[in-house]
Length: 98
Image (cartoon, rainbow, N blue to C red; front, side, top):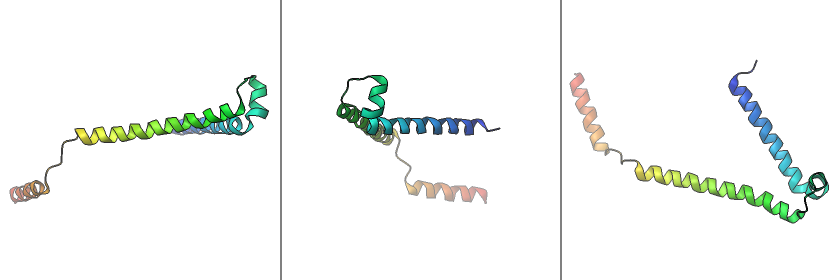
């Protein structure tokens, strides 16, 4: 019996595999495979444009969000103590132990 983590991993794998295959089939076989099945009147070029544009937009926004998060973290994190203070604390602790 698989653990819960293995089951979730398997589910993620299957979802990613199905999305990847569907994406490739739609991108390269829209006119021959997908369009007759769902009777859309969109042109092949229009579908291919959106298949490229949406993931690029999502990736671009994700990179900007990560950059904003890093900037926010850097802006709100207090500066570290100077190294001299660490050295003084270490020597005081060593003297107390002796």
